[in-house]
Image 1 (spheres, rainbow, N blue to C red):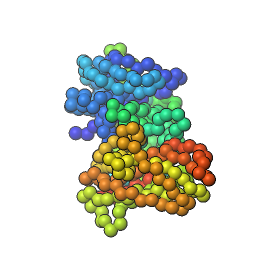
Image 2: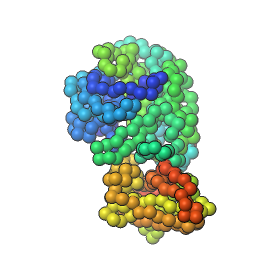
Image 3: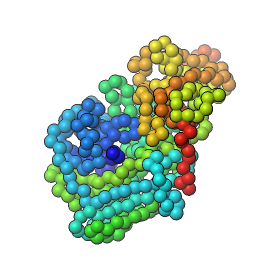
Image 4: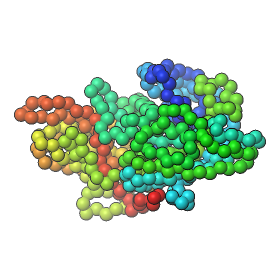
Length: 413
């Protein structure tokens, strides 16, 4: 059964802080490709998945017990009371397509970093009345995930999404933190190209679309260009607030969501920041297969001086697997959660590299790994004459490594 996505698609408010409490919320339950459950803009406690999974993809009104640990900050649903279904005024279907509009028969599209993708949208009027699209905002939403920085002095490194319109962060009970960034494009010209690296629009717009009679379908294509390296989920939402009675929920709106597609923009080169280059490769002499194989993480000093940094330890052994994102052929994350919280890792090893020096460490990926990428937490200092010159914090992402021979680049151009 395909899972659907729902987050808060209301335009950002002027106040950055909001006291989020228990109450009645409208939204749709989903579990994303990274394993996190959400309802509207709220995270959902994993213990509730069994109760909600059967209603995934259905517009709902939900009485929810909500916990917000800090304000400003994200919130999590800890309990669910009464749940009621909302009507669906339209049906939305999205597919990947080529530049000529021909369908690409895949949910998981993989392209080279910086390439384009083409999204085909089909919207069908399920009501008995005519729907004028100019009265109902239509939103293209694109989500990515990466580990979160936290604490004073830290910043995002090589984060192509730091300028996007919304960010949700939640520290799990295990101490592991997730960041989700959602670019929301309120479509004015429905078939206008979206330049992804420019981020989501902050202006609440309604589309210049046609009037749809009952039972009719309108289809169009959206070119998505300048796609930064990352893993994404993509969906489209239709604001049906003027068409249904929401019965005074906490958000005065209701949205219908399309199916969810996945998009990987794959990098083939290692990245560096502040003199430290981080790469990931398949261990030499091993062939591509769907079976577990060994990967090699590389750390190279490309600065003009000696550098020091820290690599996490597990059970006394250097292990970067906890800093690595593993995905199966379908694009679903597998293996342990990415975790930059060192107190749960059992310490770290300090590594010193002379100018031009490189160190290699083996990583054993989980079974069924098809693609992997290292998200290295760069908590280190540069030194000269054995004196600390300055502290740098952030993430360095390696290139993607294709482990499975079932993975190929799709021709979306």
